[in-house]
Image (cartoon, rainbow, N blue to C red):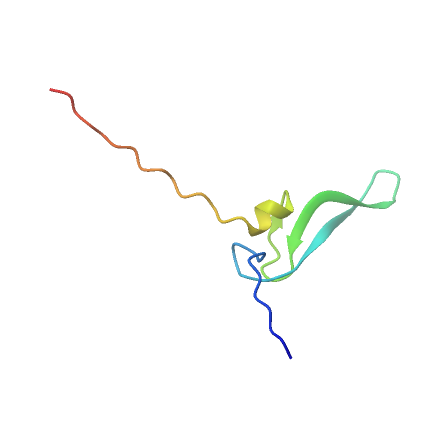
Amino acid sequence: MATFKTIYKCRECGATSYQRVIDRAQNGALLPTGQYRCTGCRNVFATVRAWWQPRRTPELQSHSTFG
């Protein structure tokens, strides 16, 4: 049996799946909100890309002094 490795996994916990967030609309219908919930850590993300894309590290600013 072949095993596969994916780069698409939760940036927080490493889970490899997510679910669409469903909420009840004012008319009572259950509708997707456009957000995604990780099946591992249950964090909610605005986009699928936000779910798998690593967080950006703050860029270091160089402090040069001019004499």
